[in-house]
Amino acid sequence: MTRQFSATFSFEDEWWIGWSDDVPGANAQERTLDEARESLKEAIGDIFDVRRELDWEEPEPMIREQLTVDVA
Image (cartoon, rainbow, N blue to C red):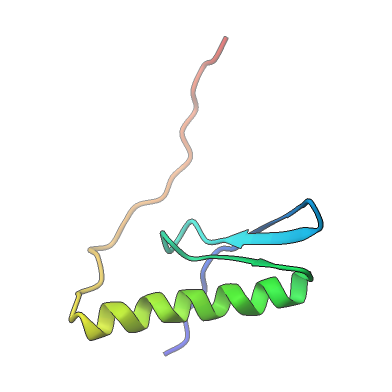
């Protein structure tokens, strides 16, 4: 099965750092952006492998929405 997940990448101190808000715990740190992408894909896959091994069910459907907040 193929699924899509959001990914965020940031360049800090000569390292590319990546994470997915869709999969808590999935993160990567590599020297190049391409390496960080591949590493993050592996991390996401690893998390789903562990869930499968532990016989976890996927969480119920979630709702993602924008909230407007007044801040001073």
